[in-house]
Each structure stands twice: as C-alpha cells, then as structure tokens.
Image 1 (cartoon, chains in turn brown, green):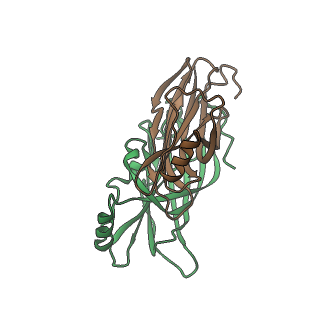
Image 2 (image 1 turned 90 degrees about the horizontal axis):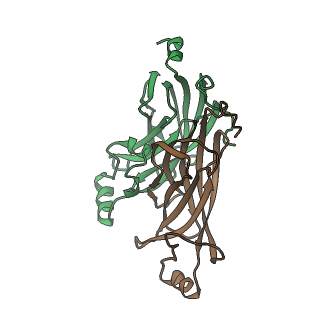
Length: 169
Length: 193
C-alpha cells in the first residue's frame, strides 16, 4: 500500500486583535486511510508575543499514513484560540487546508475566519469580549463570517511506494 | 558500519551539516546557544556529537544581532522517516545581576529535502504563572525554564505552556540523502521558497 508521511509544524499565528494565541489542529481522514503512527490532533502552546508581531507556536506534526485509495486526501482543520489581557480564552476563528499531495516541503498559509453573529453578538464582542462559536456539526452555508487572522504551517510530505502503483502526485 | 551493510537492512542515510549563524534578541545583553537533537525510535546517529555549545555572544553597539558561528554536524541512518530529526536550541545568558537565566528555547525540523536551506527559529521562554512569580523571578534570577528542553520537540503536554518569544535564530542547514529512492520513497525535490 502507498504510504504518506506528514512531517512539519504549526509555525506561527497572527490575529487581527491583540492577545496571546494558541492553535488546535486535527487531521481529517476519509475511509481507506489509516494512521500507522503519530497523533492526528493536538493543541499548541500559547505565545503571548510581546516583542514580535506574530505568535510562534512551534507545534510539531508527525503522522505516518497508509492508504488504499486516493479519494478523500487528508485535510488539516485548525482552530485558533486567543487569550485576552484578563486571561480569558476565546475562539478567534477556524480554517482548513488540504495536506499538499506533492512530495517535498511546503509553506502553507491558512487564512482564519470566525462567525460574526448578529448585531447583539458583535456589540458584545466589541465591548465585553467573547465570541460566537460553531456547533459540533456546523452547516456553514451562508453563515456571516469575518476574516480574523492567519496561521502559517510548514509541512514536509514524504511519499512511499507511489511509483509502484503508478501514482503521480 | 559500512554503507554496504546499511543497504541490506533497508536503511537510508541523512547527513546534516548545520551552522547556527546568528540571532536577533532585542531585549538581551548576552546569549550562548546549546544545540541538541531529538528523533524517532527508528533513527540512529552514526557520526557526530549530539550536543554542541557556542561561545557567549555579547550585545554589540550596533543593533540586536548576536553572531554564534556554531557548526553542527550529524549523520543519521533510519528505516522510517516518522519523527524526522528536530534540532532543539536552548539559549542561555546572564541578567544584569549576573544570574544565569534561560533566554529562550527553539525547535526546528531538519529539512526533508536535500540541498542548502536557511531557517529562522523563534526562541521563546515560558511565562511566569503569576505577577508575584515574575517579580520574584526578576529579582532573584529564577526565571521559569524547562527542566528538559527537548519537550518542545514533542507535541504532548504543550497546551499547558504559556510562552513569550524573545528572539530569533538563523540556522543554515545542508542536507544530503542517500538510498531514499531504493527504499521506495518519492522524489525529494520541492523546497520552501
């Protein structure tokens, strides 16, 4: 079977509003893909970033996947969390990227968005803090959202036995 | 061990020539750098020293730049790319009262593609858990630090740490790979731009 190694890190994050940032990630796999080694989810450290503009998360990603199919290529889902000056944690947004299929190194930049809610939620967010979150199984069609930041990932992809099955990626 | 006997065991070889060239630390007066390596269970170090320590670089009058000029050479062999090696960088220095304090920890992955690479590594220190702790730490020179710096190369338990980025270090890395094609790995060509 063909193998894919995802080796990389969540490098840094940037948010339009001030405060320390942390990032949660998980790898979404379709049927036919199996995890041989490594974790497919995690949460990074919080970087309060008082000197530089970006928060550096330096969170390693190591996954060894094996697959029978090329359908449902793995995707990384990100959730950005923000710590305000009072030590409160709020959801700063969501984002997702496909794991690159080409072997080699990739700098991946993932734009982050958050649901902005109605007028009441926007006023609350502005003056009190807190944010609107998605439910566990969100239907995001036509939900009002707002751009809130970026997460930078560095991903190295190593493929094995693709030649044997005639796969060009 | 000769390279011929390695081939029979379905191994590939990674040769790393790294050079910790310089760093930028805006709020530090002197920095000394220690490099260590963390890798998966299938990796072995064939040649080279796992740890290297640089000279202490003192702040110059021109800006925040500290030059380390620390060469770091390692040869690995492995059967499995899982948990590809990472370099862990710990920075130490003395504060204005002469206490030894940690100035930052950083982690960088050894490139998976052959060739010359330059990486910028963010170095961060753990934050004190309270205002009181930070005042006491400042006066007595007991800043929070990691007991085992290699923790920053692993993903477990990281969510409990709060850090502050103090500086950045630039590392040049030259990577040579051997026998990856024979082990069925795809071409290692595409690189960061």
